[in-house]
Length: 267
Image (cartoon, rainbow, N blue to C red):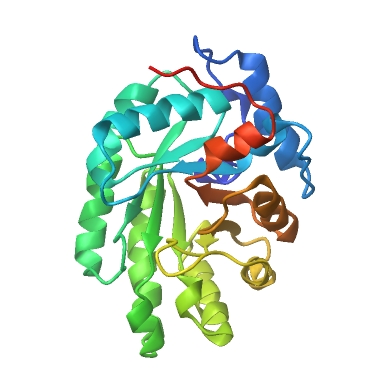
């Protein structure tokens, strides 16, 4: 199934298309060097860029900021941008013809919407061209002991995503969970067929190295995304070395600048 290819992020050369902003050679280097090893080098921004989901999910995000976000993603070779569902169509139109995917959250930010509503939202953003989905787990249901409900809620969105051959990540909101609840959340996500487990939205706290160590729970059945509070190259390296396969951050540009990447000119 093609979604197994998507789990490898965008290392497949078929996804790398020439564009006028970034040479193919740089994209190839950026998308293969870091993902071939659990180690990460801070000596070259090109080895760091492939880990970053370039995100802008503030409530007051403007159209101009989304446009800038998309140009930054192409310039710095980020594989994905993450924007609100209402901006998916805009981001898709800007990034058409580039290797950058458009991702969006489902059930953001509390995860407490009805499963039917999450499914409808997923269908709609996929229709608009979204290439990855990050759904928020129903934390209240998990804490209430409704494990079957949580698993079924996740599976319902997994089915929609996988039918469209799109990666589905589950945001666990780890800052609100006990250690035992984090383990259960990982187990339910994997049982439901999720491609990734993700730490947090960043609204209640961020990722920790200890949280990323929970990848031992998912093993090779799913990947791990660290999100929330990853603001520096040092933070990013610590998460990757702990086992994170992807980093969600709104500080991607600052991280690239700190690693010596060229500036993107103001538009």
